[in-house]
Image 1 (cartoon, rainbow, N blue to C red):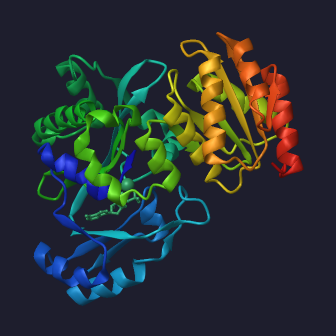
Image 2: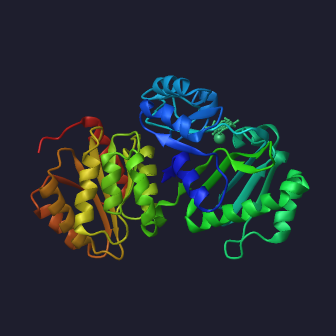
Image 3: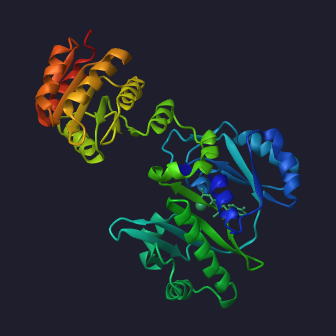
Length: 392
Ligand code: ADP
Ligand code: MG
């Protein structure tokens, strides 16, 4: 789950990390009041969207009076902000963060993320703050410092010394900087982040370290142990399908194609999407019901897939390992009866009790197209999706 800047900054603040004083608003009428509350000569109005590059796209505006705050805020609300990360359609601005304008002496880049090849968190930092890391990586990769972090021990003192010296942080803020790194790693681990990016982290003119921007992504698989993040979801703009998927613990990602996929296991789901593409089709979604899906989950999975009007055919591809195929087949039959499927349904089952399962599907009287292997399943579903509706 991606967090908005104001949500990420709230977390940082709770860990004693300095962030600019600010408040989020959802109506421009509140802008003058918030400007006065902050009590600074100048404030920044920042578009809250789940994408970066807002500065360049016009999503960060400086204002100097309460009425200017209102004018700029009303212009920004409801408009669509296009940045290099949003695509051409842009992202609608529904929330604005008004915060004090900080006097910047130096901007740094700082992030912690997971390095999959090292299988551990890695700290990435650079003196070239404010710029996208991809840009620095292309132009001056030698300015990027990477430091793998020990998840159990934390950041070793020698690593802290190495990082500060490579960054050329002056002695005075250096202890503040190492304290900040320790706190940031704490935020990363305790909140199950997959990304924590502060760009820029600034040294202010009074020598303080302040997180001017904050991007946090929480590992979805760990959300169940963070009930405190539930409050964030009201802002997050999930589609109805995503809300259902979360509720029924289904791994669901909407894609652009026309073939709905219902698969058990992430690996098989990926392979299924590959097979569909190999046969010239486009998957409409990734959907993994997990290794031991219940009947209710299968029904909800069909609901989710069918809520996407672009879906022209569905492929169910299940390997009965822990689950038995006949149990899954009964689940599919019941789900089809309950949900009422109006597009061709291709089912490929393999594994324990597969013969009993095929018999159940054949005798169900439902218009289910059985496939004996993945190749023929992919072939059948691509053809069905091209032919359009089958009257049931
Ligand atoms: P984005 O990364 O989406 O462009 P940022 O929050 O990083 O948005 O803001 C872009 C730039 O705007 C920053 O690099 C910084 O120079 C300036 N900026 C952002 N917030 C403030 C602030 N509170 N005070 C002063 N300058 C700011
Ligand atoms: Mg930024």
